[in-house]
Image (tube, rainbow, N blue to C red; front, top):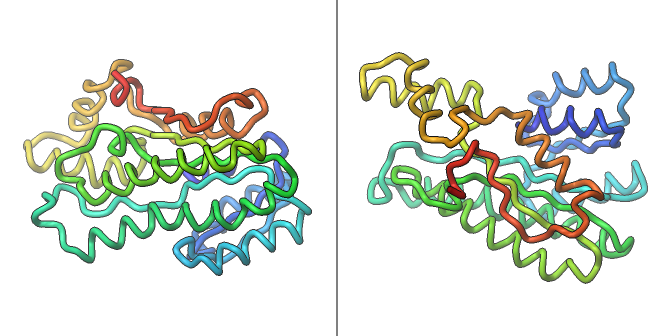
Length: 245
């Protein structure tokens, strides 16, 4: 999803600062941006490190003079298919730390810059399991429920400064992780093909199709743009009709 979000904002003419613990993973999309003439900066940054997030925000201001938009798309999935009783304390802590504290740190880092200008859009990419819960995904679900609380609280605190804070909740997003881990586990358990497993997932959604990374990127664009000026503190499911129905 990070690559799709990056390409979508680049297509709108945004100047970008790309953060990642492993900057090598950013190289492919960075080369695309370079070929397309997009102004961008790559920062090695661990979002669970508060000081590193402040350094990245400072680098963004030094490079481009301001921060208008923050999209929090970094995150992890945690244990899959493990009950809460079988999830270790370390597994729970690791994913909650990444998915909750990471977003808290980045918002806290850019908030002073946005407050000073009286403008900003913050989009947190969470998940539908943070809206309905999910058996076998206790740690992940808890982290995304917590992220919703962070987003809503910041929306109330930053709203008087003309800063919108929202939450995008993708359902299952098609890609290697969905096909290999989610569909692979279901296929093995039921003795079916991965393609059939994907169809079974899609059958649970009103639109009968799996979300793509482009769907998520478009939702982020909407909530980061002036056309959503009067929308803040909302949960926007991008799941083909599952969490809200």
